[in-house]
Length: 333
Image 1 (cartoon, rainbow, N blue to C red):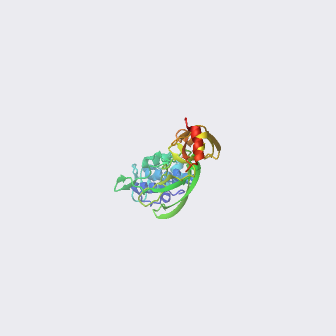
Image 2 (image 1 turned 120 degrees about the horizontal axis):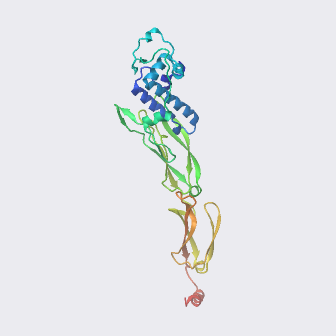
Image 3 (image 1 turned 135 degrees about the vertical axis):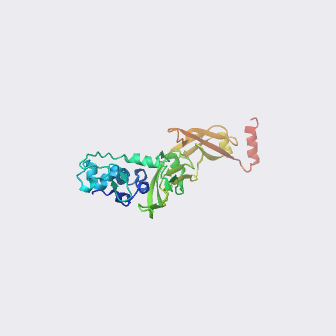
């Protein structure tokens, strides 16, 4: 017979439409290419095969020809002369529960095999939509219970993703290993590990969520849960973030506050950056440098400000001579 569509869907030859639908959903959940980025070619081939099997076995005419004459006759469109017992069959085909179909096919008739598009079948059953942080399908799998469809998914597996301020300034790629329980084609759970690749974009903030739809735990009768990574920002030794701005504290002496100072900074992208302070620095003084803050993720090429907050260190005591000198210099100011 060539390809065994019943074996592909893991159903017996008496399978009815509901049996076929459940089998297809279970296998599509596992083999959809969007959910198999690491072995996409293999998944595409299996997904196409699963979809073809479902298409044939749920179409009364296709299933009848396949059951009676096999895959070759189905795809070639040439139905051979059958034994005489089939000459008196009814002209109305139906998907039966007794291991095959009856009627509807005439000996030596010509039949054109037009397989349905795999994605069309998927969309019809799942109503899939593109969503999620990585643009993959997030609207997976409904479970038929008593003829009524109810959306049920495993709970979300949420994980913190620690990132340095440099990671969030420059952008980076992180690879995270996850462990989950996965249902095989027969619904049996087995442990599985996978490495997920996360592209951190410049300017992402603490709390940003990256969702991998369907990469969480599976359980028989439910759709797979999602895996969500939540950006967590590690403290930095010099800078802290305030929205799109970077903020740093700089302590200077009273003399430097009055006479000026050059600050030598190292930026998050490792540039040496010199800033000369010429203003008299009063308590609470803040200097702003445009374009030296964090990248703005929604406005590529733009950055926030660098804000330097000054803390003036006053001397703990002055000698009489120092006081006299200050009075002479500052007495009229």
